[in-house]
Image (cartoon, rainbow, N blue to C red; front, side, top):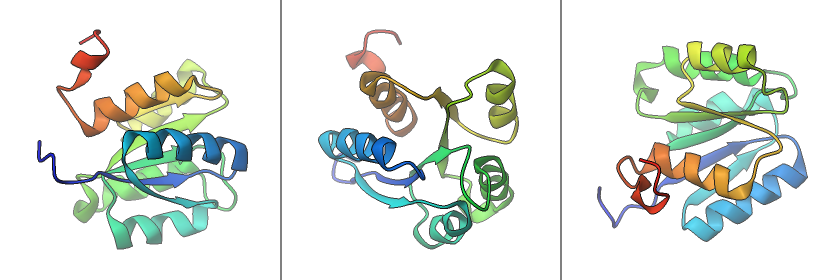
Length: 135
């Protein structure tokens, strides 16, 4: 992995308190990041910036996270973009739906900051899980 490259993360989350927690974790981890608070703006932003990872809420104003995920996966130019879906409804069915639409991971809200950090690392730095010990 190229240590000189800062990973770019796009947060797509409409709840400010959750977005602040995500901002805190990503800043501490040294990731470059930006935030969108509504679903309709997410896809154009993803296409413009091609982030390394999208932290994608399922329940968003205007366009759902599921629709955004599906659209990203249908765009060959965005094939390298990783998607970590987040939802307060963390049922097995929700998880299966997100993964079936092409999400790379799924995390239930509320989440522990360590859990989020570990998921982000797993997606952005494959092979670096040795720090957590559960490889």
